[in-house]
Length: 351
Image (tube, rainbow, N blue to C red; front, side, top):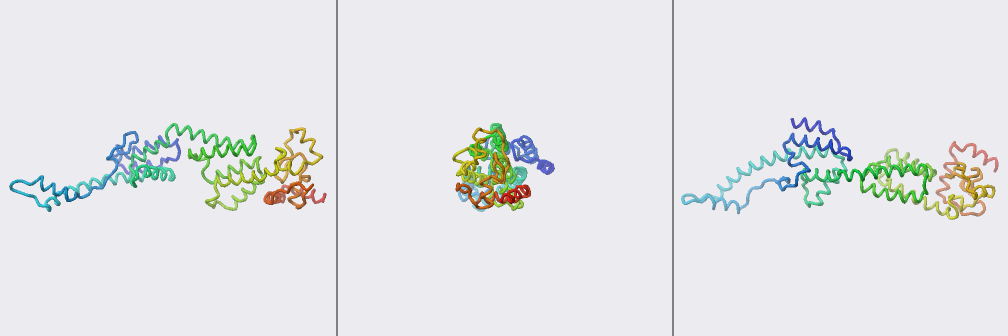
């Protein structure tokens, strides 16, 4: 009967807060099938008997006390008699211990098979650190898991998850300055780590981040990262993480700010604004601008873009500060795509 309970209950998986109520109910059914729910129930107080201790044969002191207690005027027991007596007692204690141990092993295996592996591992390590012993009782595990999935933490996790998803959406619409957005992202990311939300776990989260910042903030940078992800072909190295990619994006932003000192328009401000478009820009044109292989939207045609021309010819216009080599390489790579066939023809015709 108990084996049926165990096999049917293992379909319940504990990986997030919404799974708790079904998981603890399935655990209760499994524990009751083994007649040890009283040692598992997280709502009951911890007891010394929760820790299963293997019985040992008594030492000389106990054996000697046995002789004293059973000595009469007509008979004095020998130490051998004491050993034989306690041997029988020990065998019975070992039988009960083994029976109880087998039941607890069933529950430990059930928990290990139904709890998220990283969560299960971190829970055991936390308990061992607190208690200073290797063995972890069933009640210690269930109490720790219950604490992890308390209603208060559920609310915080849900709020953090929503904040993180909203932040990515904000980047896609470019409703904020990239650098201010990264400050908010870092704060939210640290909170997400503390609350262990799923939105920052796995390879898909890296893709989501790249897509978000690539929508408006840094299309060229994002295209290069997407190419890198494709090259990994699902074999992403351990050091290519969401945090490492975000750090790289911050370094990219820092590098591009070198060309962003005179105007919030971006790199084009430092390289100089063309005379035929400066009036439009100074009057605060509401136009979104023209797409360009340089990765920025601007008010003049792509074939007039100083950054693009420098990237493909190596000639610096008006002796302005040259863009970084890495940026030029990415611009040139983008420029060579089929999308810009007509542009390449125009530039070739204009010489």
